[in-house]
Image 1 (cartoon, one colour):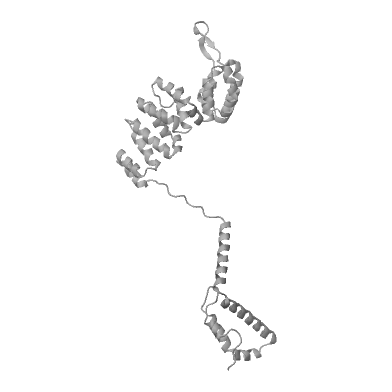
Image 2: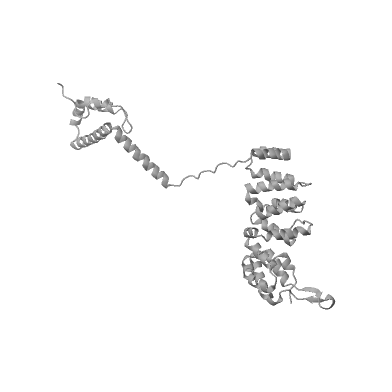
Length: 334
């Protein structure tokens, strides 16, 4: 029987390539086995140190190739699973790309422009197709508010807009439409007060206060509206939605005496705004006439006894918000 060459035999070379092994490993081993004689003669003439170096390198290569060929499928699967787990752990520890929010259910800009040019019917049809797009209902609200205004339809669009976008309550156009409806026919006025009381967050009570005090930019021309607005503003549920600035102004306005207002001054200094300044300035302002004999004498300030405390609160408010126009024009008390 012929002698076999040392190292892995040709039978190993027939093993198919796997993940982790080198392509063509079998051929390389077969050549190594068949060419042992010439290689031996070549090494014979080399220096001793070089022969040891070449022999060591060949042994290392043989061990690595043998381990790759002898690795079974179970070992490979285990190693690959471990590598995947390591990669996942590394990826999880680093910063991740933020996930983009899903697109809003909005009408395309060109369709909204076409519907706006088409008028109310086109806008209503577009709103039926995109019922969650607040921009459609804002345009529809403004279209209904054009002269002559259709207050009921404008309010319906405003209500839907506020349901989809509560922040629209701060929009000046929305506030103007609602206030204009309050100056309209009785049914529209009642619906407007309802919307202010329950559908506009903290901005609704602000509008009710302006109507109740007659300081609204939109004049209703209806004295009964001031009383109706004041009544709605006095509801506990409405005042709960009001800002601290509005609540203190309302309490100062409704207090029956200077003594009742005195404990409110500290809160007024901390929370008050223009509305509190307007109330307080009237308490320390004297009139040039209207009192005394035939009403020709100067009138004293209503709360002259606590004028110093009131003015201190007013100064604190002005330091935070700036002076009220009404307060700046008020004459000094004596």
